[in-house]
Length: 161
Image (cartoon, one colour):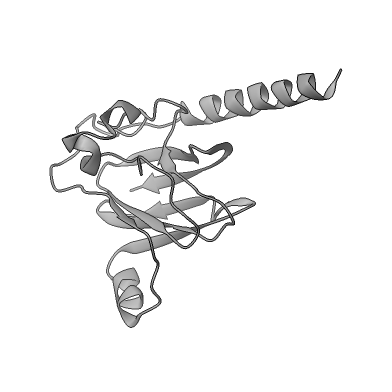
């Protein structure tokens, strides 16, 4: 097999794995996202004392490096804000599974990026530069798979209780 064929095979296997893992999301009671559920994008991640206080008040942080997300899976209570911090050397784009449609978390879809609904979906809707972050408040109970849209072989999960 030549080099190009091997690359194509790896991309197909990785995409299939992301699709398969993303199918595991459930929506608990089937309800839609509440209007107060807003995602946030930040180009710079500060290291001030407020971040420590926010962590105690229902915030979880997931770091993204060139190797992927860490921790890969977190368990949080409903209403917890999860911040994805880009500590890698390239852009990241966190979003709910399944790549490339981003429809596993209720009400989410990549088709809503660039619309008024973009602030209510589990999708950063664009790449975050190194040092940037994206936050989303999880109100729906379930096991929600996510991935980096720009490197779909990097994925994880947020379990909401």
